[in-house]
Image: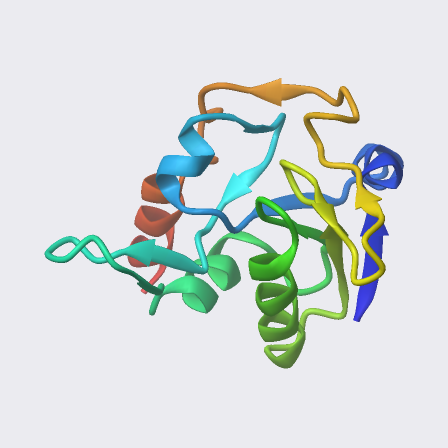
Amino acid sequence: MKQLSVPDAPALLAEGAVYLDVRSTAEFNQGHPMGALNVPIFEPDEDTGAMGPNPDFVRVVQANVPREATLLVGCQAGGRSLRAASVLEAYGYTTVYNVLGGFGGARDPMGRIELGWIDAGLPVAGTPGEGRSYPELLANADAAE
């Protein structure tokens, strides 16, 4: 699994990499890296509110991101993105990076701080750009079937 620190992400994004934010729709809508796509790996159940796996995760990513794309997979602190990156590699994505520290920052196993997107002062969007929200990406996947 390739790992990438937040400060190294802008260089890959400038080369055409795709930032895939795998946080929930609600988290994404509160702020996210500028230009990110949102495909949650976990979403709250409509009836109970409990977080559960998104059964459409792989299908939606496959419908919206080519397998040959360079993917930077991020979440809030790095746990969900690590899982999502592993899943995407299993489905044939070959250039996948887990973004250490994610959007909000985290501590590594040694207790050191992994800088998050916000703390690094990188561009943040408060609303999804056209075609980047999960409902739009899901609709694209549904239309492709």
